[in-house]
Image (cartoon, rainbow, N blue to C red; front, side, top):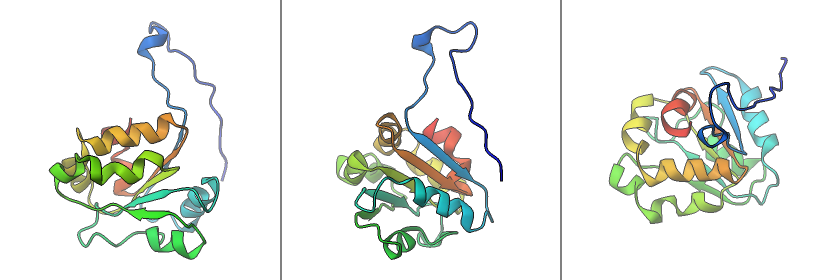
Length: 155
């Protein structure tokens, strides 16, 4: 697998204040990506003590995930793992629901149905907090449906 580093600058014709580039990192993986994607995300999280939020809400049973999700985070030694699940926009817009995201080093959006994420989270405090994670230099990762919503929720 190869990777490239892009040197980003203000696009021609845009003022600096119109151009936004977050400080954090996005990890975007398609469905059926195998274990490499999950391992890459886990290795990028700074320490086992770093707060990590897992969001399984794309899945109909709210727990299925392609690489083990919150369970795997705990199994490999992460100490501060929070699972945030809702399909209720009002709850997604509440300060109490998003509180674990305010100090999160990483937020991981699991796979499933994309519409469950967009209908629940677009335009809510949850979406604002995802931007906050990136602006603080954190990680936002998504697999399958979690990757597909990056344009709607994260960027």
